[in-house]
Length: 384
View (spheres, rainbow, N blue to C red):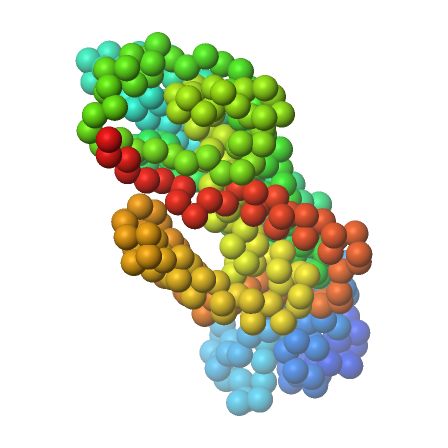
């Protein structure tokens, strides 16, 4: 650690003096360590200093340490303000993202070919390629959702990873995709924009995919399978949410949708709607939690606390009142997940100024669109 490595644009210790009394400054490569004593609480300190560091290309964290790297002990009231250059997200080929993307392409090809196109994939592995429309639709809906988050993260200078797709050989072929937020959220505007961009972008892709899928004839394998079943035995039914019904009416394909046999690309649209519902649950660090925190500020905790109870109540209603197990497990599992998210809490922006009317209106619209994707029994087993 020495002067030759000092970042030339680091904030001057005197500029921090209103909220942080600096006693020593050290450098470790591009990282700057300000040792001293806070003169304000953590929230006020971050709000006051964030613009100063951000304008110079730094992010910072306030850490309590017992000693520095060379063993120098620190007093009980001393803290270290650690400033690092903001990451651009660049750094070579993101191999983990690439590998997971390729694996998810393969798993969705397998799911589409095996479950929907009825291809004997173990005898004819290359036959999976016939399911490319299904894979393109699924990957497009999920990928555009996550890219919406990523683009707005970059717009607001918040470091975020590219999407990580999650392969799994189910009816869908994937458990979705996520991005990892590595930077702090500067304000409520950024929190709202990043949170809402994913569901809105994903819904646009979902509507397009659904409308295209409804124009396609069901696969001969599907028609033959429905005819051979002859109404006997049990079958899994994916019920249509209001938005799917609306798209069918607007595109003149309601009769096809009501027939119960549609092209697998329509199912990709169904997946997009179901993912939107789950992501817009207004709790924790889900998209809905981000949007609600940006809209209501700290008052969001009251709403978030009610979400797990609402999900458990829905599961109990389906189990005891409707007297069946259909979709009970889905809502009970998400009730547990929402409980964990509610306890963990939402993302907290550095500055907490209220949103303008335009974003408030867009936030309400986003939740309304999410409600159109909801159906209390998304999946059920029908026995003739």
